[in-house]
Image 1 (cartoon, rainbow, N blue to C red):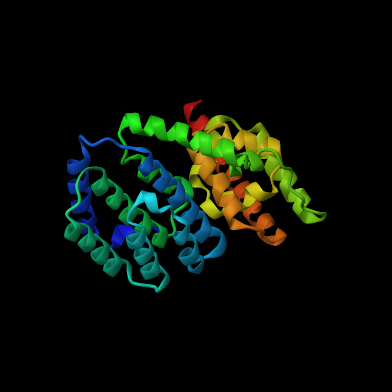
Image 2: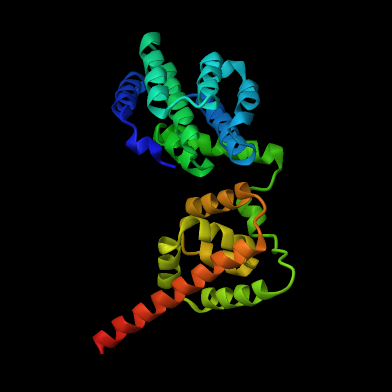
Length: 275
C-alpha cells in the first residue's frame, strides 16, 4: 500500500496533473466525469473482493460514452500483467502527452491515470473517491454527491456502513465472547478522547477485524467520534475483507483492549502530575 509515494516517476504524474488542471479550468465538468468515478469505484471493489485478475472483465463494462475505453482497458491489462509501478506511470503519462488533450478530456484522462495507478497500489474505495473528488470544482462536487445518491436509490443496495450498523455478529461460543465483553465495556465507559486515541493508534487491521465481532452499539459509539467518511472507509474495508477466523477476531480485540489499558494508565499519570 502507498508504494506510489516511493515511485521514482511520481514527478511525471504531477506534471500531467498540472497540465490537466490548467486546460480544464474553464471547461464544464459534466456527468461524464461522475459516471467514470462510479465505474472506477466498481473496479476498486472488484479488486478487493475478487483480486486483480477480475479487473479485465470488469473494465469491459465501462460505458463507451465515457470515452477512452480502449486506453482504460490497456492500462488495466498492464496492471494485471504485473508491470512495475514506475513503468506503468511512465507509459500512462506518455500516452497523455501524445494525445494533446484539451478541456474536460484532459481532466478525465488524468483521473483515469490516477485511478489505475492507485488501483494497482491497493487503495480503498473511499480513499479513491476522495482523490477523484479533489479534482472536481466545488459546483461539480455538489452535483456528484446528488448523482451518487440517485445511483444508490436506483440500486437499493445497503452501503457497507448501513450493513455494519444494522447487523449483529455471530460469534458462537467460547473465549471470544469473554474478550468481546471486555472490549465492549472499555468502549462503553471511555470518553471521546480515549476512543479517538484508540482509533488513531490501533493498527488498521486490528480495528477493522474487531469491528466484525463488536455489537451494533459498540460500533456506533466508535464511529460517533470520527468523521463519516472515515467511518465509511472502515466499514468498506470490513466488508471487502470477507470472512475472518474467530481466533483472528479474538487476537485483534485483545490488541485493542491492551491499547485501552495503556491509554488509561497514561491518562492517570497525567492527572497525577497535575495534582
